[in-house]
Length: 389
Picture 1 (cartoon, rainbow, N blue to C red):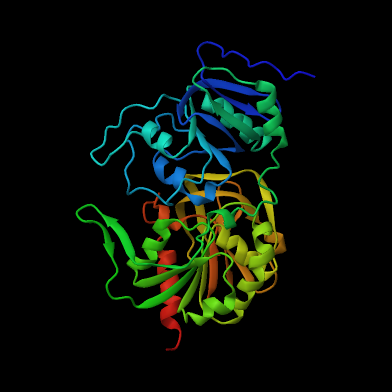
Picture 2 (picture 1 turned 135 degrees about the horizontal axis):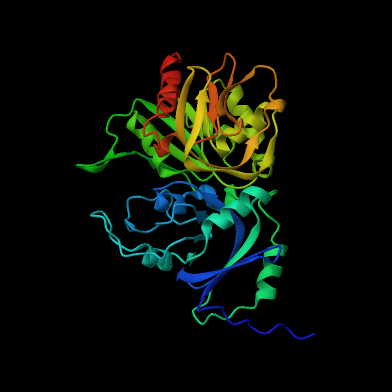
């Protein structure tokens, strides 16, 4: 049987999103040419596209930006969360314009090209977002060929063959391969990023795909951070004599990552050291405590998610990026739900009764509130300060 012939593009399109069910979304290509496969999700944030594209938690995903004007402030070398973008591509409503911001050093289009990221512009992102909300995040192939020729049957077949994020241990792919020290503090308008001079505490961070701004928040509060690979044994972490242990954000299925990581976290809990987890770190902690996780249909991705902190009664506007969640019905005795999403009631935080161990599903470092959730870093520091010398 002969292979299908390349299909000409309609109306001058040079890029297409092909979903596993055969749906096609035609548009114009931007960034790097090529084909990428992944889970198609959407993000509702109006700002921060460069941080989103470099967030290691987006490994294996193609991001649909709901806000139409992406790229209008350009890019710069400071607003990144990881050295190499983890996202596989992005989908935009409007064409990428020339940057209009005093901090910009490069256009988004040039930045995407330099990093091998494929982009699709000019499609109805509202229609695609409604499809994802109604039917769940699909597998898809994003293809950009300047000649506009595509083997559509092959693209759909590739999308259908992709297994999806469930069962994938992607944290290993984005974790550091060797330990390193972190002392950079938060950005300031006058002087840029600072440097921690006189640390009060030593924190070991297990890197499942850690965002840089999380590490900066810790350093700003006086924590010298040692970042270690996700597979580091608990004995090696405790040998570093940390005042506390941080479990970072990251991508993929927590149950898959937890196969090797959960036993080590259980040892860290038993050590009595303060533990703080964010995002995947929250899910890893929950699994180590005996809870379970599940795959969400669409996930939470954006910068306007209201969350209630049951310990204070306050509501925070938070930034989120997660496609898996902890099943509250599986929480064992002695573990309390501390935070809840006011959008859909998903569990967003937990704490262990009588122990210095807690976590949240959302991203307190991303500052959409803008500082609604920064207290969580202080809470971690206070737990370390309360421990006897």
